[in-house]
Image (cartoon, rainbow, N blue to C red):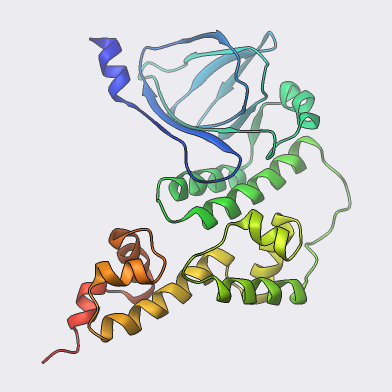
Length: 269
């Protein structure tokens, strides 16, 4: 019965985001992992409780304010460190996101106490759980990768991010051209061209809004016009690039303050 209960508290999926092999959420109260290895990088946060694990014959722990990065092909285990077990969220990332140069530093210091990084990883998990928000997820993952590199391979004297208004303008033009079909961050970085992290920072610095927020704003603007023209929310969602009606409703309500259906009928007598 305990094993059945543990199984019901697990969810896993592969999102449409380059570099993410798997998203894994679990709540374990009794289960303990034996020693094992992964082919991918393991990026782990614990929301409740704590995990105790061994990595390269050294014991580590993951309290709720820690981000743990476990390198590929290095054996590790895991077991609850509190009576009520633990609730965790995990990303498995391939080598396109984190290279072999980080393996040694990650073995030496896998647990990172960084509130900003912890918050960003949580935000990334939220984006990955929402189909249609892949550009946001790519952007957040790129900045997380950059911060992980800064922790594990620090380079002094990097200074503040360099502003690049010309690059930001080129990305805005690209987003304007692709409002409905959308575009992934890696594709945009290849077309501009620029490093994805620099591209996100340049755009946000120039316009005070992230690329994914700009794209969703443009889509919501188009949706408003179509709704006032009498189109149904479901039809508008398909016509403006949203994943489905629920995806439209979430972003529309966040930006306009009412649902698409309410907005559509608000002017009717």
